[in-house]
Image 1 (cartoon, rainbow, N blue to C red):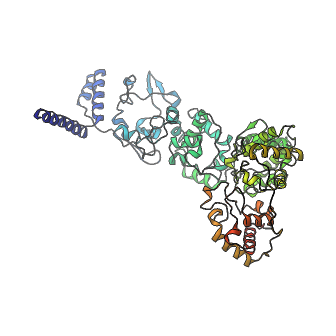
Image 2: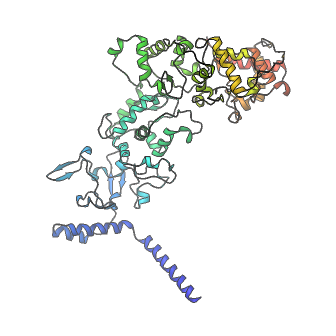
Image 3: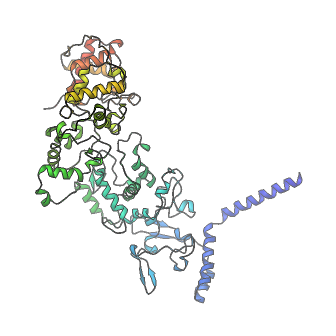
Amino acid sequence: MRWALAIGAFIVLIVHGIVFYDQFTNRWESQQKAYFEQARVQAKTDAERISLETRKPKIEQTIVTSFGDTHVDRCQTCHIAVDDPRFVTYQQPLHTHSYSEAMGDVQKNGRWERRHKFSDFGCTICHDGQGRGLTEFDAHGKDPYWPLPMLGYVSQKDWNKKYIPDLMGKDYIEVNCAQCHTEEKFAGTPHVAKGRTLFYEKGCYGCHRIEGMSAGTLGPDLSEVGNQRKVDYLWEHTVDPRSLVPTSFMPQFKLNDEEIKSLTIFLKSRRGMNFAETALDRYKFKVTPTVPQLGGTQESEAKLTPAARGDKLIHERACLSCHKLDNIDGGISPDLSYEGLMRNDTWLMDHFKNPRSRTPDSVMPAFAFPNDDYVALTAYLETRTTPPPPMSPEQTYKALCARCHGEKGEGNGMSAVYLDPAPRNLTRAEFMTHKPEARFMQAIADGVPGTSMPVWGKVLTEQQRKAVLDYIYATFVKESPKELKSRNVAEKNPVPMSPESVARGEAIFVARCTGCHGRKADGKGPNSLDISPRPRNLRNTAFVNDTSDKRFIESITYGVEGTAMPPWIDYGLSQNDIGDIVNFIRSMNEVKR
C-alpha cells in the first residue's frame, strides 16, 4: 500500500513538474535557441559566432503601418530563420521563406533580394493569421472565433471536413495579392481573374452588388464579403446555398471544383477598400452607377439585326447559366426554346425590365441593361417559333412538363425549388379528380398568369394537350375525374365593391386568414412553412385579376381539395362575409392607370 502511494505521489509530482515547466517556458524560446546553435555552426566569421553566442531568445516583433490598419506581427518569433537563406532545407519553423521571381524577387550577384521585405510587409498582410499570437494555435488562426485563419494552410474545427482538402494550398494567397495588385490580368492572381470572369458568366452580378463591379439588389452585398466570411463558408455556399441558408433562393450552379475554387478566392478577395485605392477612388465607386460592360464593341454590334444581336446577348449575358435553350441547359429556370410561341413582345419587355411585374415571386433579378439590349433580346426570343416535333404523350410530358412538375409528377422538377408558387403536384388525386377537365385544359393552353406556368396553346395542338392531360391522369393521378357536385355559386360577387365592404373584408381576413396567407396576404403566414402546397399569394396581381369572382367564392366557401384551404362555410362565414373578403383581395390588386 505504501509503495502504491509513493508511486502515485511520484507520478503526480512529475505531472506537476511538466505542467509548471510548460507554463513558465515557451516553445518559441527553444526554437530560437535551436536556430542560434545551427546558425553558429554555419557562421563564417568569428564576429558572427560571438554575436550568436551572446544572443538571447526574445519576442521578435514587426509593426506594419503602410497597409490600412496597423498590424503587429510576431511571426518571426518562431519563424526566426524566415529571411536566412542558409535554412532553405530545414523544416518549419526554421525554414527560409521561398523566393519567387513572380513575386518580384530578384537575384543579384548570386543572392536573392526580396520585393516584399518582411520589415515592410510582415507576414499576416499576405498570409492572414493572428500576428500577435505566440503559439501555433493562436498565430495560425486555428481558433474558430478568429476571423482570418492562415489562407490555404489552416482549417478550423467547425469547418465541414468534406471541403477542407479543397481549401488547402498556396493558391489561396492570391486573396491578399489582389489587395494591392488590382489589375484584372495580373499574372500572380489567375484564380482571382477566373473568379471575376465567372461572376459575370454565371450572372452573379444580376443579384449581387460588388462596389465598382455590379449593382444587384436581390442577394447580399458582396463588396466586403471577404471580411465577413471565411473560405469554408464561401466554398460550401457556392456548392449548395441551402446547406447553410435553408431559405436561400440562390441557384445551385453546375460548377466544377476548379471553378468553385476560383469563385471562392475571388469572393474572399472582396474586402472593401483595398490597399491600391484611395478614399477618393472609394467615393467614386459609390456615386457612379455600375453597369457591367460585356460583349463586343458598339461598332461591331451596330451591323447586327436586333434579333441577331439578341442571339449574341443571350449567351453573353449569362442567361443560359439558368435557362434552357435548345441543347444548353442551366438546369434552373424555364426553357426558352419556344418562347416566341408563348409570350408576346409586351410581356417579354416587361419581364426583362422587372421580372416581378409579371411573376411577383420570381427569383430572376432585374438586370441593369440598356433598353436596346432588352429590345434585342425580345426580338430574338420572338423568333423562337418552331414547335417541337411530334412526340408521344409521355415524351411530350418529359420534354416540356417534367422540368417543373417532376419526372413522377410530384411537383419537384429541377426548376421547382426556384419557383413560387411551386408547380402543381399532379399526384394529388383529391385535387386532380375534383376539378373540371376544362379548367386544366385552359391552364395548359393559356398558362396561369402570375406564375411560371406558360402558354402552351401555340406550342401544342389541342389534341396534344388533351393527350398529355390523359397521360397525367393515367400515370400520376391513377384515378378518373369524379362527377362534380352541383354547387350554388354566383358568377359575380353579390356584394358591391365599396370602402365599407373592403374594411369588413379586411377585418375578417385578419381574424380568419392571416395564419396561412399572412398579414400582408402574400402567402407567407406563420403556418405557411408547414403547408404543401403553400398558401396562395393574394397580392399576385396578375393571378388575382385573371381569377373570376366565381372561383374565389367557391374556393373560400367550399375549400380546395388536396390543400389546406378549408370550407369556410363550415366555420360560420356567410355569403356576404365571403363577398367582403373577395372585395378586400381585389382592392389590394387594383391596377393603377
